[in-house]
Image (cartoon, rainbow, N blue to C red; front, side, top):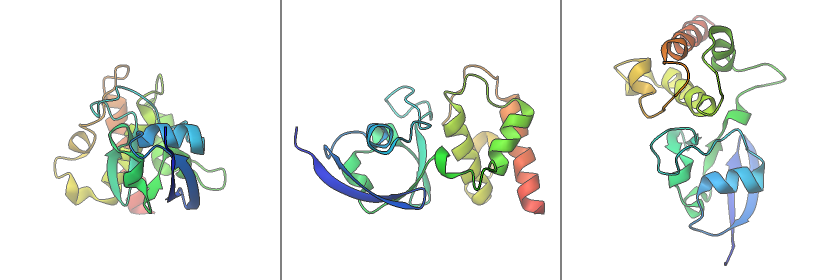
Length: 157
């Protein structure tokens, strides 16, 4: 298999990896970058467990060929906490019980972060913003409470 050098910014740090151009970005992030918070769920872009933010857009990393990440800015769950402090969305998930088994949590958190940053993109609120993320444990109520708690805290800060 031919590997190609691919450079991108991951959580604010310049990275260069060697990967097969058509390998899923999810696999490259996990294997080459140690970004194991990005989870494999379905491999078909249907569950949201592999969600990352690429160039300011929420994306399913299992569906993105590594070559499309060249020169991109990528955010994963690992990049949210700062100086040992959880991001407000992570803290709200913790407080409300929005995280249970943990498979969907990173994708849910990133979708929530993106929603709070750009609420105009989801006029239907948190439910619309997170509709591409599946959870089999929580029933979504705690997740929606977490998103709204984080949103209200971040807006008042």
